[in-house]
Length: 178
Image (cartoon, rainbow, N blue to C red; front, side, top):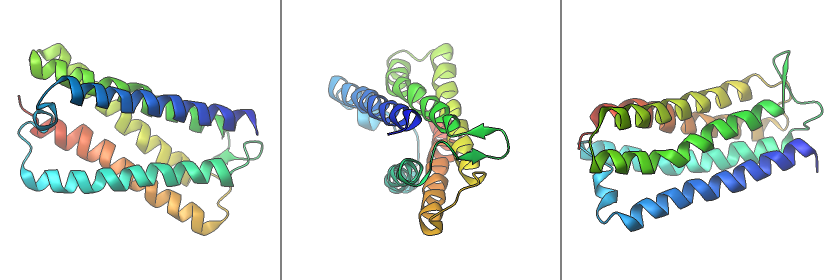
């Protein structure tokens, strides 16, 4: 296995474990925390957000499968200058801040403080921008074979970007109140 694919695998395994652990920690140590995380978000947005969470997760997995199984790190090229390593940087930029979201949000709920709110919003914006960067990098790769797999990966990237950049970073942050 190519070293960049090993790195990608480890970033996703460790990052996934840490992100899921932060969610499990938050939901098990803060009774009612799950409901509090919705803040003042209207019920109709709950339904849209939950549906897109599943689509974004499936999209993340599909996009990752395409990168892992269909791209050759030696020949993968994004535009003229960037290569496969770019995807690993983007994965880290999505996963590392994602670990911080649950603890920051719960800390803010317990102690509404402008600095905590700013940090929480910053985390969401970084993840949203990274997801948009992932989609952009994917759309700009030279290798798009097999085409059906590439198109599925792009669709997955779109759902991931909708969830992180639109629903989380903009809409959730706009409606959220303690």
